[in-house]
Image (cartoon, rainbow, N blue to C red; front, side, top):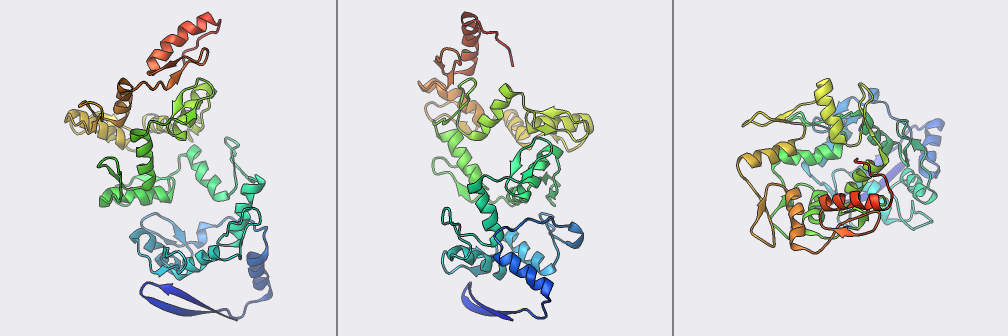
Length: 365
């Protein structure tokens, strides 16, 4: 059997041929199932057969050629271009897979979305059916894909298999390592249009705009009415009311509300990880960002300037706390009488008095 495909690569058109010979009946049956069966199941892979390891992100491959193709994602080398959307790919295999989204070969009958493969389509259909077959054994959270469950499980275990070969910092996801590598190269491609700050990742740029330049707070806490700019902040805040502790120590099973608390615990109690030490005063921090902010205070560096007055601040958080001075916006509300306040400390004082008036027992969280 011969399969001929024409692809458009950078600067030239390439026609290549793939030959499939001597396929026995069992192999042919498996190939047909992969292409035609909509109920494709996900099978776990064993690393024992994946002998070729990427030196950048530690991803493993069974074939040397696949590793060579993978390395191009770290260098940014795009060899093949899609003739439909001009998106670039590091290999012909990736381009062939991508081309399926421009056809109706793997099209969802519910929403019309075109997928790259039958397995992708099977996973996509779960977004319509609500099916989440993969359940976390620690917190019972469910997922549509086994890979998402595996990634989530590292939150509980603290496992970080992707290590930077420059500074030995480790990550739970390969994408985070890929973004981190730009710290060493100094590459910051994403510039803020409202200030002169630039970022190595587009998601960090969007986060910066919402936190620093936007006044919108669309996320409300249903327990106390506090408002937030991003959903992540609300998600962390709600744990105050629910007492949820999703981050567990794998050594002693102690639970924590926030990941930074788990990381600090691992450092102090189990000597796992590395401290970030200030060269000036020897103070130790569990996060590099906290050390960076601390060092700025030694040098009296205040890069965050208020747009309404000349006052400057060391951190974006301090600038955000200062903003209410120039605004009538009141982001904090009392959960008993709905009165609004500019500052958290003010609403807490009010709530104590309001709780007595309403006969509610006030508990300091």
